[in-house]
Length: 397
Image (cartoon, rainbow, N blue to C red; front, side, top):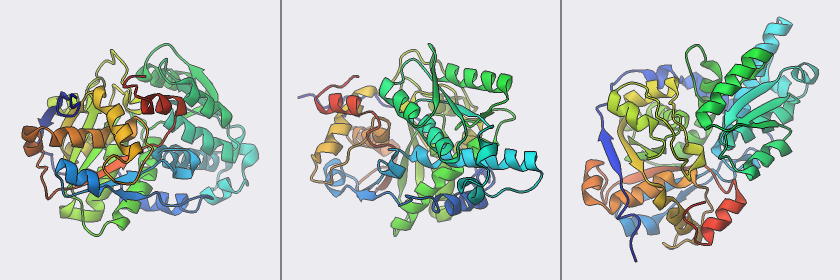
């Protein structure tokens, strides 16, 4: 039988990070601490597991694999629960403070003290699914209207999950980046507030809050590890997840922070192209990747400011190794704990397995039998129909 990992077409560009203070300045320790204090006070908060995969580590030839499993997060199925809902509260806090002329606390918003005012503030965003679900959940909790834009390839299951949380969901014919543009345009026209996980010129506070929320996940992982990992492999997308994790790891571990490897679908490799050119670079999406949450052609400028200083390697991966990795995890084929993970969650693990099947690539990334690798399992099963098809043997959905 052909080994899809050994045959995977991986592409790698190595860069010399431009050392600076972005990991402390763009996302400050105070940003992370503020998000931690708020999110850990929410009903239902519990740390998600950091799962060791010793069987798989031994099989592929690395020292240790730690997989941060975000499937249980707040019952929403992904790490995005930490970002969109928190950023929504912060947008409301700023706007209510302006309207009322006095400081407003997040606890009071959460507690319903401003429910009537919140009902008059519409929050909106574009999404591939998980960010929108988080925003809809956050809006539902405080009574704010929510309008979500999705592109043509977002599954109806994911769309319905947002409707079930009270969101008005608008589907467009174009791709993710087109949905971002429409969300911005209609928000400007109607006086709504965009809560995006990507930044652009003149728009920074909400994506900063989104990334600060993600820091809860990274702090949990760091507190569960005795020693710093040697490597971390992070999914691309617009770069918000990767930049947040890289910044927190630098703040927590200092000079011992791990080597940062960014991996992306070869169908949506905007960070890879940005690394090659040295500036944020937009790429066209000609064909959607199975990894719906990573189908992004335009990088976040704020995220790139961190990644250009923290990431040493950028890798692209094919869709062909995603489904096999999901089945490997779910079936516990290596004797490890069984983990049900979504398509975007396994990007780092799929890349690691493929890299270790290709000695030249492993050497280029400094991965060997002593390596201790941290992976972010960013989502659980957020679309049961897609997951079921993959478990039944489908490699494309």
